[in-house]
Length: 331
Image (cartoon, rainbow, N blue to C red; front, side):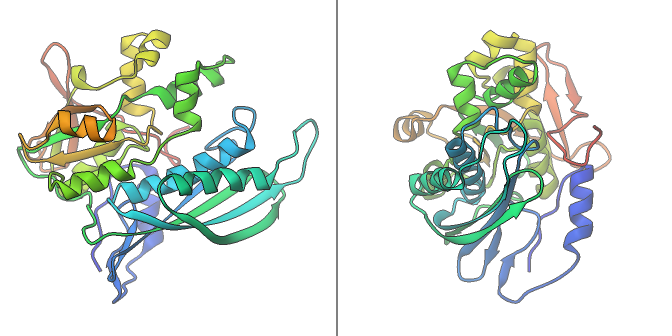
């Protein structure tokens, strides 16, 4: 069973200890990537959404909570360029308490089902229980592919690309946490992420992708995962990062770039490919997604350690000391 090397951080240190060294004859790819791959082409992933960790009920209605929980799990299939087939949904539902509004599990399920349907998948089961605390949703997504794209295919000289503008979801959270209300574009980026399944499968069909990940932890963090898995250094170009215009309007360019780099939960694609092979106009016309080349793969960092560096607007290059969101990082 193949494993993919995980990047730095307290969360990933814990994952390394948790997964152990178990093996399985029918497993082609085990821990370390966005999903596990079985020998017959099945791709399997699971994703937890916990109230007050991943979302707050005062920010979203119940159907939006369900959509978001389903979409982020299905985004892991997009990260492997797998076609979604089925989804299982488990919910631990709290009783109403104090001034909280009553949660409607049927509305949550409708949201998950709508996200699954949007990429051709079907909800086939799950589990339901009461929770003494917050709402917890666990979504297992299953897909199939003959050519699962992994994180470990980046090589020296490759280009690094992303789909879509970045930073809008993190900007929405920042505004909510400061007591404000985000505008429609920022709110939609958080409440209604779209798994980029078609775009990922299209990259494979065009044979232009060597390594792939979805942007859940922020560009800096997820580029770090690609670097760690491939054993390379990645240099991001600060001025090339496609920051959402609504984020710049709300926060200014410097803060907007920080949110695009470190905020996370964009659920766009970040992929690595040979130089000069991406047909930007064709891709944008077919999938309606803006592409941006945001960096290059440039061998190993000093000392042989994988790393992510950034080329600033003045031409200086420095190593990024901060990645993306880490559940076990400093509070």
